[in-house]
Image 1: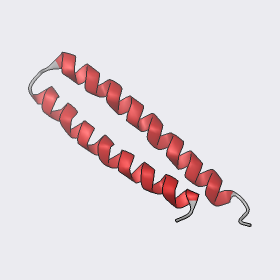
Image 2 (image 1 turned 30 degrees about the vertical axis):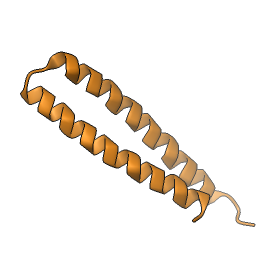
Image 3 (image 1 turned 180 degrees about the vertical axis):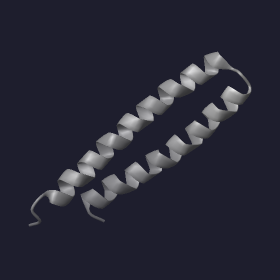
Image 4 (image 1 turned 90 degrees about the vertical axis):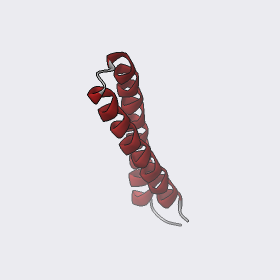
Length: 67
């Protein structure tokens, strides 16, 4: 597996975590648990940043000249 493929796989894993965390946020919103919802929003923001980093890695590795 190439390093670009590895970065994409990591991004996909992070996206799954992002979806699960978003579902948790929806549950908390329905329960009107604002304090916990803020914590989950922070986690969502961090996960989104990690996804962005992995996608950038994959993009740059895919664009790099192959030996």
